Image 1 (tube, rainbow, N blue to C red):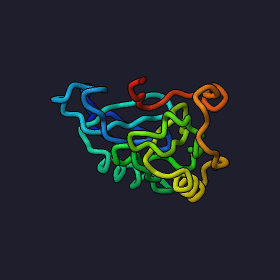
Image 2 (image 1 turned 60 degrees about the horizontal axis):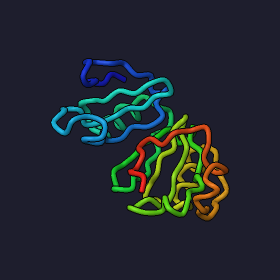
Image 3 (image 1 turned 45 degrees about the vertical axis):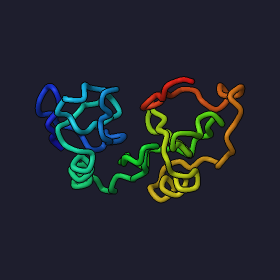
Image 4 (image 1 turned 180 degrees about the vertical axis):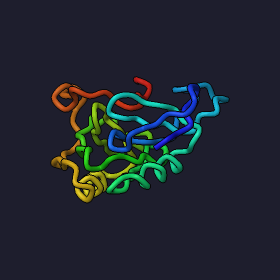
Length: 160
């Protein structure tokens, strides 16, 4: 699929390399006045786009054998992702269950926190043919290293 990349112009993306698409987050990722509206994360890199997350989803789905799966970020923004490549739900720390976050999933090297329940994450990933994980209760912060390794969060919330 071809997208209008920001700031470097048109870019062709192989839809089989797409991990997820979502809105770009101002001002964390780019200045608020930047014209980019979406972000495509592939297995290899990412590109900000002029297209919205919904337009990116439609472009990708037009070329994919299976449509992108859908969950919502903590602030109820959509995350469209290759569900067959996802794993979840992830076990979170008790302190991470806040500000709308109820669960998370793993795709590629990224953990993505979502407002969906762990059961909803399990169901979406199972339906897409991804790797489901046992639904486990949140853990104490002292055991965090046992639950999280070998990935990075797509968006890091402020540390309290």
